[in-house]
Amino acid sequence: MFSKTIFKQTLRSNWKLWAVFTAIMAIMSAVVIAVYDPKMIQGMIDMVKEMPGFADMVGNQMDSITSLLGMLGESFYGMQAIILALIFVIMTANTLVSSQVDRGSMAYILSTPIKRAKVVRTQALYLITSVFCMFLVITIIGLCSVQVFHNGLWGTAYTADVKAAAEVLNKDNEDVQANLLLILNNEEALEAGAEAREMEKDTYTAYLNLKLTNNAYEAAAEVLDKDVDEISEDPSLIKKNDKALKAAADVMDMEPMMYGAMLDQIIAQNNLPDEQATEMQNKLMEGIKAAATELDMEAAELMTDMGKIKDSEKAMDSALTASGLPEEMFIGIINGQLANDEITLDNGIDFKVVDYLLLNLGAFLLMFAIAGISFLFSCVFNLSKNSLMFGAGIPVAFFIFQIMSQVGSSLEKFKYLSLNTLFAPGEITGGGTFVPQFIVLTVLGTVLYFIGIKVFKEKDLPL
Image (cartoon, rainbow, N blue to C red):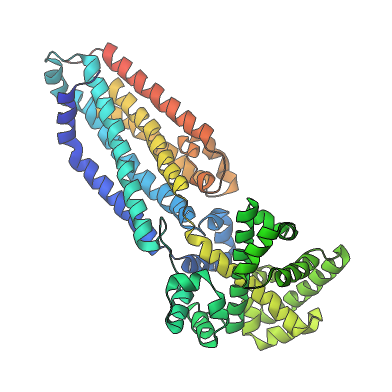
């Protein structure tokens, strides 16, 4: 099937090139993981949103980098890993066959009793194995980095406010994380937590209450064997099950009856008559528009960061006058939005190992197919320059077409000219469709290797 002797010889000749590219890619992956900070990323997104032209160019990509996996998918697996792996594949595939024919070393190998078919199969096996091992190493280093820098695999990554509050309360981080009421019920811990999160005290209080509410929903969802989002949309499900009600009440440190009464208020608020809800929404929008005019910015932009209203006394006065809403209610709405933003940041490290493994599998399959192209032309041509012309030119063209398709809607059709389109990290991390693309890459790569092997077996060589 293949020659161990030739495989070992090929390995000795090419391991340094493989090691260099693998080390660079693994280090780059680890660095992206290490420096990832949800708050910093959110700040970058907000800054980009203030640059309309650039925001239109990057499109939906900004929304996908709010999580660690999204950032890895868009930056590392969307660009750096593909470029470096592409260079490695082109260089290696050319070296394995056409370069040896060009130099005359293939004549020496074929002068041995080893058959031509076994030689070319061995070279194909080395190319596939080297690419697989490359992404295997990157996967392992990536998983280790996620654990070391973010406790993303096991253990708990405690937020800055929990650490600060635990120090004030003289308790373990784990105990404080499990019972956020310890922070809410201690003024000094509340101030320390707010300072650690760089938030105002009332906004931080709203964040803790929202976090507790979500934790209670999670406890109830576990009892009901339902999705948390389903409970959030319809909290009345909790009241229909005594065990779920008690589990949620325990999180809030309440008696089930008292927590049930609180749920009634939440349910009533969620079920406001359409006319009343519309009126409230219209009043809020009038307030936001007035504040935006005072701050000399667009209302849509202000809605993404309503904290700016609180930072300006004039903007707040304008908003209250225009909306007619009580100050306490208007500030409560602002605090609710800011609290939601903070929880989104907390979820930024949400690291799903399966999705990460799929990212690496997808990158490998893309390189498997592209390596098949380079290997095919390495087998077709006897001159190294001709092999590189097509074996490098076509994969590089695919990469360029993919980049062009992302520049703007006018160039989007270029994605249909690129094999790289079949590997879409955003589809993997965002729960989209990717299995058919993986199958196409696998079949295409396999066919290309078989054609390359067949061509090399049957063609005339300048021996």
